[in-house]
Amino acid sequence: MDTERALEIIASPNMINVTCDGVPIYIQHVNKNESTARVYPLDEPHNDKEVSLSNLTEH
Image (tube, rainbow, N blue to C red; front, side, top):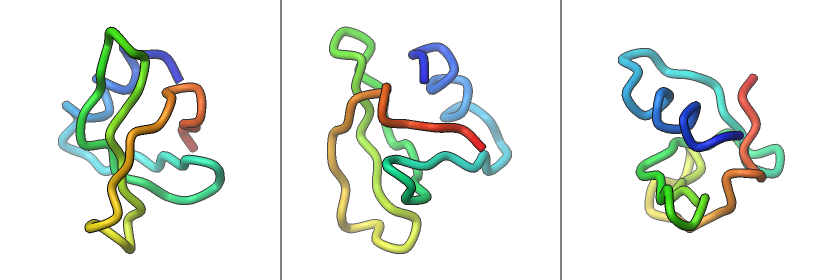
């Protein structure tokens, strides 16, 4: 996923289906300089991690 699309998803008032390595996630923050995002699985909001934007897929 590219940086601009990840930022659009964060700003969207609608829930957009995104996965990281096949797991449905919520994007909390995008780091433009590093091309990473802080995400967490939808069913585990306490389990956040930093991942490469290339690992994110929109469905």
